[in-house]
Length: 386
Image 1 (cartoon, rainbow, N blue to C red):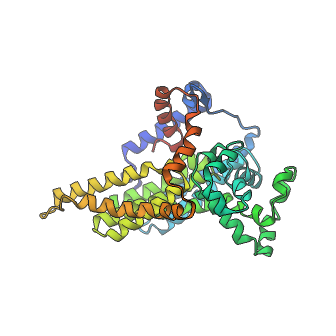
Image 2 (cartoon, helix red, strand yellow):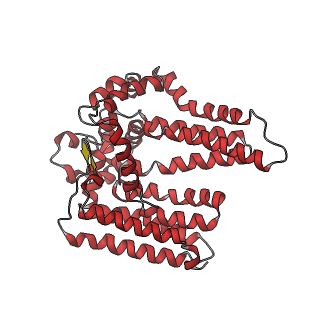
Image 3 (tube, rainbow, N blue to C red):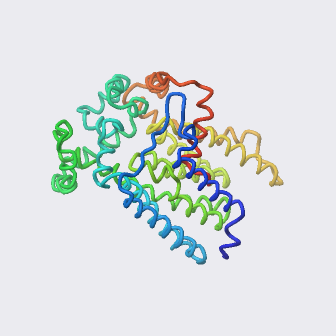
């Protein structure tokens, strides 16, 4: 394909708007773009401008090679390059502020993020799950993230700890470069090698996040064609939140979310209830990890109604009126799976966990209406105008 044909006029407007937005943020001409009314994102200038060289050259090289690969008939090279960019560019962005290993380890084991620390404190997983509201009341003293979350991430780190505990040589090897990074934190250093080594699970989020490229291309190609799919994967490593929030798990959530959407669309378009059920199961696991992903349930419902409307418009034989309800029931059955298991183990419903987490949200002393606008502002700032 020709580059001039594939890069539309809206694409140039998007790039121009993104550069203008970035310039306004860096110059701080409009401080309100960083928030107001109780919270404003801090602005911190680089102490060593030479550290900007890596990210600058990295972005230029990534875009240049991506445009070149865009001309190839095969998409394999472009996908591999986009995956490499999804790993390398977040590392280059993190290097602007700190030593990479120190930054990624410190954020992962920090009490502020909290999931790794909370998992390391668990002695009896069953008892913790049964009394999760009391557990997050304790963790709220050092982490609002854990206090606002269901148990999913803490369970994942606990499972990693349990997996590494009998594998002593592997745990010793993994922890060797980490202990000296936080040797002044005696409470953290008191953890076993296995519990510290599990931090690599979070530190490698750019690697896990790079897999998003594959499902993004598959979904884009099936819905909009190969050209749109190629542009989508080129943009992905340049999304600001993906670049600057590594190694937080938020950068990983799009991967299972896209898997859920892909399964759902295949199930709806081919009328395969098993795929819809599987999509619901993926969504069940996602809600067990973070309540912030619950709006995807609304998206699933809207997609179902949209496919139903398309079927009515295009098919000679319209889908029966109860088809959306049938698909919704299959999805709902899948959505309940992880929570039914949790209820059987712990005796707590998702509603009980949401009630336990809600005080952390309600305690935020911020005016409601201005933040409807400011949250939209945050969305564009961290998601990017593309």
